[in-house]
Image 1: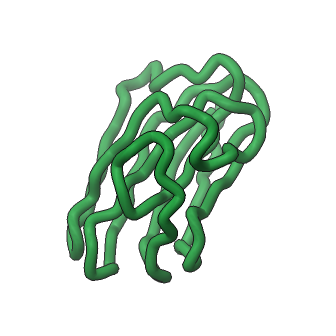
Image 2: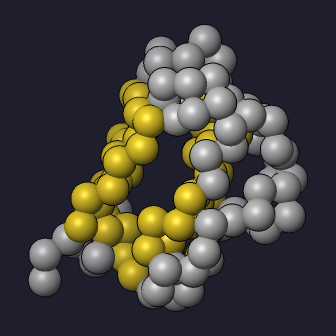
Image 3: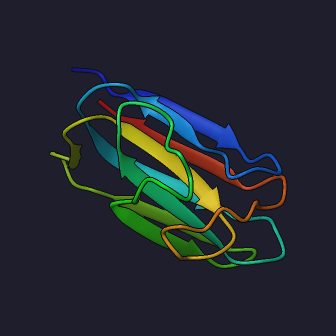
Length: 111
């Protein structure tokens, strides 16, 4: 099987998005945070875009200002049984809805 690439440049929102609307595996994710504050990448096991502040992420990843976060989840990937969804917020709480600045660059590979 051939994996699919996903990319996003953040807007001044929580950037809620559905990456894959059915079960799948996330193989790698990277976020280059060009903004002036730490941001939090939140991953959701959900077939649609998350309702940020209501849906609970399964993983929250802090990315410092000016830093690159990159992770590989092995050849089997990180399994999502419902779908792969994400958001990027300014604070770490699962219920945070604080928008981030424009320009953070996200990429991911999934199947």
